[in-house]
Length: 259
Image 1 (tube, rainbow, N blue to C red):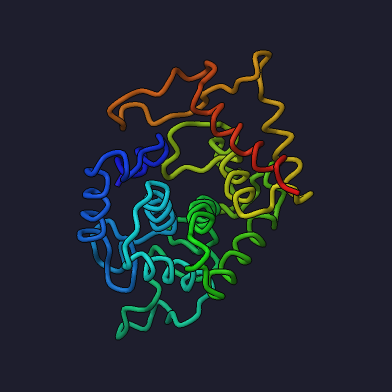
Image 2 (tube, rainbow, N blue to C red):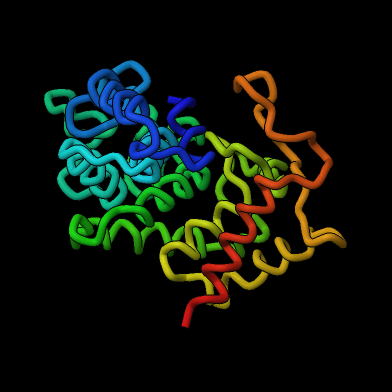
C-alpha cells in the first residue's frame, strides 16, 4: 500500500513500467473488500477514509484503471453522503458503517466518531483525479460535502474536530514528503485547488501561510517525513527540498491559472 502511494507521489506511471500496473492489480485482488472498500485486512470493517482516499488517488495518479474502481469510488462517495449505507448496528448487512468508518461526513472511530480532516483531505484529493465520465451526481454531492467541511473552519487554522477538543496535530503546519496518512495545510490547498476552489477567498489565508514559508531562493523546506518507513530518504528535515517545493509550485500554478 505504501509503495503504491509513494510511486504516485514520485510521478510513477503504468506506461513507464509494467510492474506498476501489476502492483495496482495485486492491490485490488488482495485489499478490495466487499462493497468497494479498500481494507487493511480485506474485511469490510478494515477500511478508513484515509486509506480509501490514498489508494484510489494513487491508482489514478499512476494512470491505472480497472472497472472495480467504479465501485471503490461509489463507496467512497456513498459513505460520506450516507445514501444506501446502514447504521453501524445493523449487523445483517455488509453495506453499513463499522467501528472505524463509522458514519457519514468523514466520521472516523479513530477520531472518537467525529469527522476526520486527514481522511477528508485524502478522499477529496482522490475525487479530484476521477475521470469526468465517472463523476456521478452522487460523487458531486460527496465532493460538495467535502468542500463544505474543509471550509467549515479557516484551513490555515486547522481547527477541525479532535478527540476531547485537544489542539490540532502540529503536523498540519509542517510541509512534508511523501504524504501518507498525515495531511498538512498544503495538501488541503492541493485538493481544493485541484477541484477548482483555488481562488475561493476562504482559501486565501492558507495560501498566504504557504507563501510565507518560501525562502530567499524561492524554495520550501522539508519539515516532516517518514524516515525509517521508506526505502529511501527524500531530503533532510529543515533544509530546502525539491519535493516540497514541487508540491507548492503545482498548487500555485493551479491557483493562478484559474480564470
